[in-house]
Image (tube, rainbow, N blue to C red; front, side, top):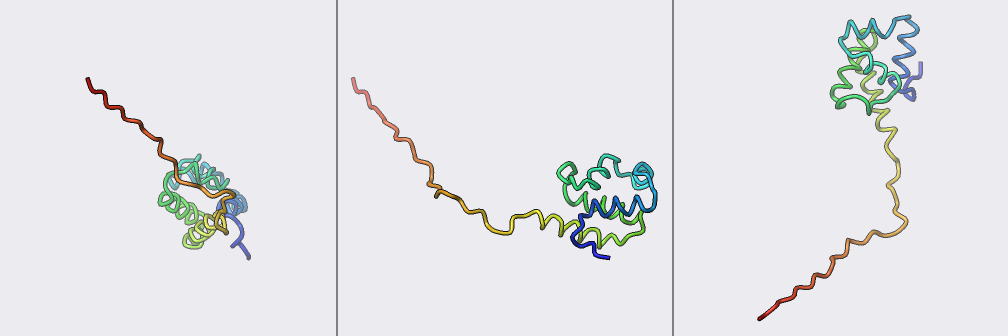
Length: 110
């Protein structure tokens, strides 16, 4: 089964639905907020805490579904890498350093 191009969230959701397990049941067992599980299934990782926590959530979710947690975490890391631009961003115009505003200092003598 080819899952390398499939996002981890879609994969986990599909596996959960095949097993006919409600998200609430996984949340209750793993103690992962249901909102976090939904965000994972929708690949909205920006709604979740730091990636270290996400990896823990993925591990718990995978174990609950009797899946290999290492495979799921690798899938997650590859998914994140796939979101990065492959080519460096080319600027259309060169960026020059900001110009310093000339300061005029007046010395008043009386």
